Image 1: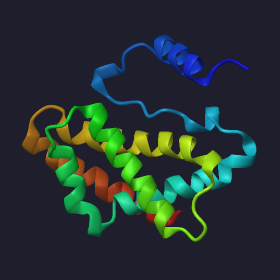
Image 2: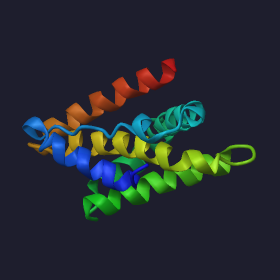
Image 3: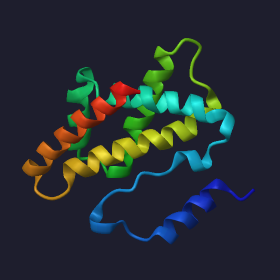
Length: 142
């Protein structure tokens, strides 16, 4: 089996740039063995539910408005989210599921960030808020 990073780089190169600056979330399922899909889906759902929760709304806005480079902003906040989930879970999260779950949550966080920072700030803040409300509703159904 080829190195997963090489596979991801090859796929990214084949896709080319996203149309219209729209972000395409990575497909974590492609790199996840079948026996880990259920735990990863649960971690991603719990992470998204926590990320879009009213309790973290202010932290989410601070993260989006931070002056840190985008890659650092995403990495720090997704790792913090995974650590929070690990602390809240009884017995911790399955170690083998952390990478694919992190990839899924990274996609969620990047979508939030791109919807709130592209174009005119005021217009996209409103659109970002709509995105957050819509994702909260979707996550609540899972």
